Length: 358
Image (cartoon, rainbow, N blue to C red; front, side, top):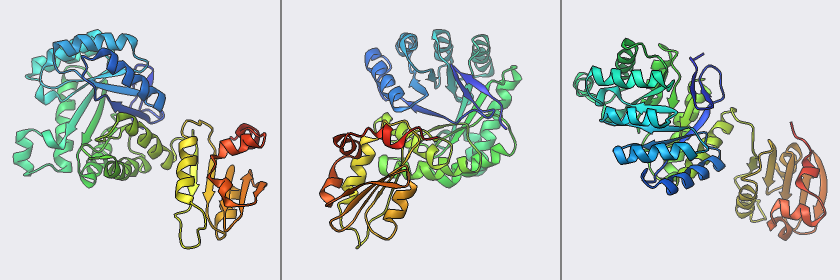
């Protein structure tokens, strides 16, 4: 089990639930815009948010944002160690640095001393795109071994100054590379791990890479907090992270949609129906399984096993709740109505059908 650190009210490592992080894409000096995005992230299920602190104006704005944020905030620092100190003094819940790019040891010591005084952890953020020159010369190019060696060199530097309130990440845009790096590191250290695939691209491919890299490591028991990095609205990162945790069996809140992939037997507009059911239940926090099935082969069976299920066929439809068919529909056009709306039309609230699902 990894060591535990605390980021505001959020515990990371030590058996705590795997937390979800994201990073704002607003200018940090846009205080109102940044707070608006933080609130959107919080509503989507984000638990820790990170902001870039790139100059003294951003550091001043960061402090004001901290005072009004519903989430604990991480200051992302590069190059200027003084910005890390300003952010720590302004209310940061964690500092993310690469100790190798903020100057000499005395500057690293100044940051470590400040974070220790304010009881703030530091994330050592190693990235395949910014490895030290000596490691690139040694290994020729970014390798898992190079990322791990970089992480341990930074850990030793912080430990030299009596600081061990540390979280580590070793990110790369290569899924196999980052996975191997995290595996190597976790076999040698109990520091908690922030897991992510960096620079994954747009949402479609980015979610696939993140699901493979983050999800694969989580299924091995590696990872204490995660961020899905997408070239997209950060809210989409949070949704993807939550879904990865659900798929890995680490989160059980919210709706699990079961839907068949469609084939020549399908006689209803299942793609549209499943999408509409998913959208309608996006904010539902009940841990229920909803099946949306479109043929007679697996449809009725899957629908019966779900807490709520729809099965449709050629001119017929069935609505199941907890294994019992509660409504038979005379034709499949009714299946195009959102499930919750349909139930209400028949005087049934979804809570009445599902009850308290454990």
